[in-house]
Image (cartoon, rainbow, N blue to C red):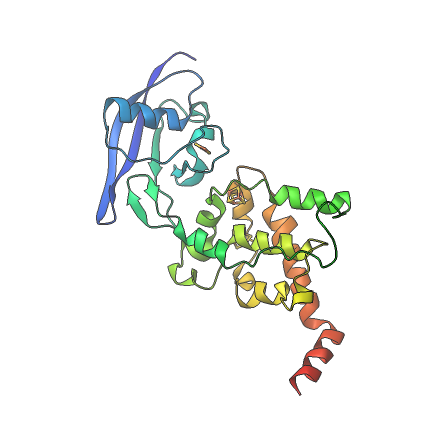
Length: 254
Ligand code: SF4
Ligand code: F3S
Ligand code: FES
């Protein structure tokens, strides 16, 4: 592919407001959207704010919306677009803008803090943990998360409803609850922490209606819905309607 000139439309502004600005910019073979944003900074808009770090799809910093779809700018090849197409780059819609393409993702850090950490099992020392390969594989899939927050941005529960943010942890952190709840060595329950109940009552699991949009945008290809959210829902429901648990709760309430 030889070089050509692309049409770019980039959102510029800050918390006080802003709008889309048009550019014509050179594109060369093998480039990604982040390269073009950097070229804009170097040649036409030196004050254009953008967050990035690794340029390898691993730091999760360069998240933005490209033609309305949440994506990593460094992993979006220019070759996926028609040369005549106008490419629109806007900041993540679910989070407050700081400036231009940079948003304040503090909501996610808050939600991370609300999930209690792994509780080590009593009497099992460091180096003595044993798990089946199946359990290891499950945790490893969830641990591929690079915290780009594209799933958090795309989930309609908060994307279209700012008011749900207090009650809903979002797919990334419900996945964390699921990981811990399914972890064979997590001793939360023995210490009085019921992760299934908190998933429902504190992290808003019930808000998720399994649209799977989170899974579709995950750059790590994590099966968030099928492997984390649906199993967590099943476990929470099993717990709620388990006759022994029901009886235990009745007795405790007396
Ligand atoms: Fe990003 Fe996927 Fe992690 Fe969500 S689960 S924050 S989309 S890597
Ligand atoms: Fe939202 Fe994913 Fe559920 S997009 S509704 S958390 S399946
Ligand atoms: Fe690190 Fe894009 S710059 S994921």
